[in-house]
Image (cartoon, rainbow, N blue to C red; front, side):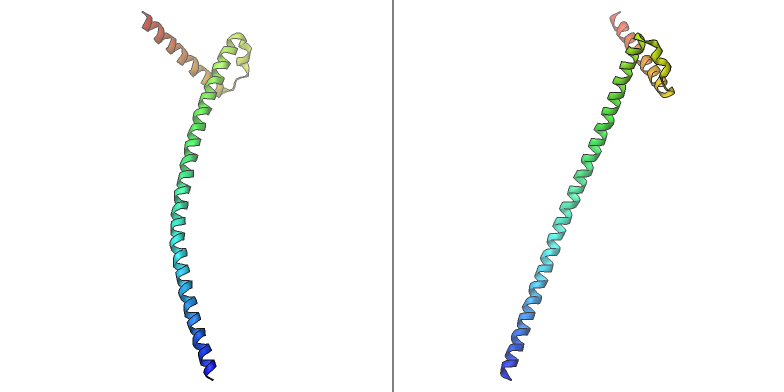
Length: 114
């Protein structure tokens, strides 16, 4: 009978030790998960910032490309006026605005020469 009591007390001690270890592991995981969560939040905000920057850059490049397309269209339409027949209403309006801007630039340069 004594052996059984000794074995039970050893088992209780082992279970108690296991519970302590488990609690320490859980606490360690919780603190490390908070650190990981903070890192993830920082990483997510960094990526979001990079996405916004890339979208801004893309929009700027689109505007530059559109301006270059309109410049090219303006030059080609001088060489071949029939090209203007195929323009959409939006393209016609945009081309008119660009021509007006170019005329203002030329007038400003002429005025500065006088």
